[in-house]
Image 1 (cartoon, rainbow, N blue to C red):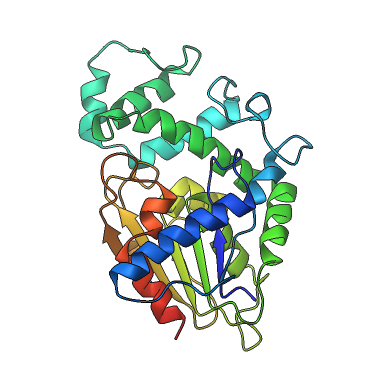
Image 2: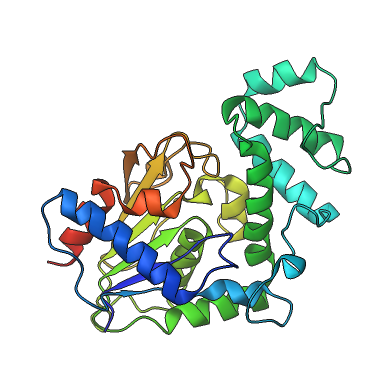
Length: 288
């Protein structure tokens, strides 16, 4: 039985459970190797491929079926959610500078509302390799999980099937961290003697953003918490555009932040997070 359950994040519609499991295992083993620890045992990792549930009645998303593709216009609700989320992470100094300039939509969809375009331009000052545009794309998918309760319930049910009494560690990346936390806090995976879960690891988590927490019915100022005796370690990169470069420890005394450096290419990458010694150390401790 799997001792680690991984919950993948956004933009995984063109891969498979087998590919993700192999990729995650190699990344985790790299970090363990750097600590001088042995590789994961065979079949130690279970990684349900939940993203197919986002398709319109399909088991796999093709480019023409991807509702979050940049070519698909944002609905009014999506634009408002994403803009509000950006307002919570954009720096005022960057926004002030953008306010003094003409709207420049080069490379940005021309039909975006002016409010959203300005915010994306301001966010790009901090994350200049298209961070604003990527933030928009990814937050659309986050919103879809938060505000489609039937879909969210299906996702949680699929992920929950991978848990067994032997499962000791849960790793969630990006939107997967939201799903993992939602699943655990709802008690849909029992955090008691019948469950082996002792550790939650979140990587690149958008739970840093108030709009996301409100989508989980967590009021502003309410701490993130889990029932049961579960250690929560949040791994973040200050250059990660989806988190605003922030950790989670300020939101709860129960969360331990671990900062990593994933490089400049793609600091939000799941594999870059998973191969770090910070994640490997938590995994090794969770296997004791």
